Image 1 (cartoon, helix red, strand yellow):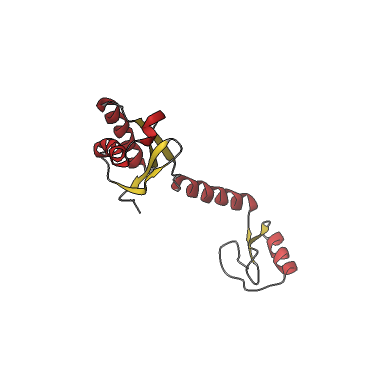
Image 2 (cartoon, rainbow, N blue to C red):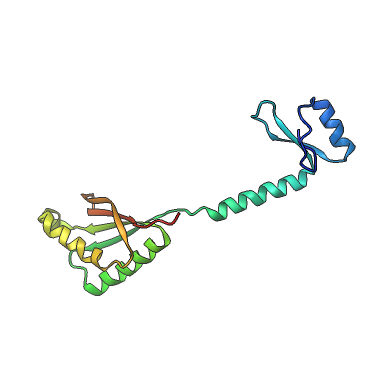
Amino acid sequence: MLDSDGSNLGIIPFEEALKKAQAQTLDLIEVSPNAVPPVARIMDYGKFQYEENKKQKEAKSKSHITETKTLQIKIGTGEHDLELKAKNASKWLREGHRIKLDLFLAGRAKYMKPEFLKERMDRVLVLITEEYKIADGPRKSTKGLTIILERAGKKQ
């Protein structure tokens, strides 16, 4: 049991704690119900709610949601288009997102030699300015060839 000023009152019965809270015109709030014995505190319930909301907002603002962005290229994609896609990929990596790079293969292109297809994929990988690591290396997918990239040096 904690008093309104934060001092420890020790283990006291519920009725006595409730009387002390009513004597101070404050509320008896159960702070940690799973503890043995449960921890309660004498304080204003409105202030308690305000502090809890403040803690939740702060935790939410510090969390960063990582998204998987998708870039799709084809075998015949031009150099300028590849540069633009690599620029976007660099920006997304800088923001901390993962990137799924799809080499779209249509028709007969699906049956081309894997070395040729990897060389086509490397054309865009060379243009990415941000440091990255390949999280899931070139593998066949329903669309063609897929690589998943992640930022190499993650901030901690």
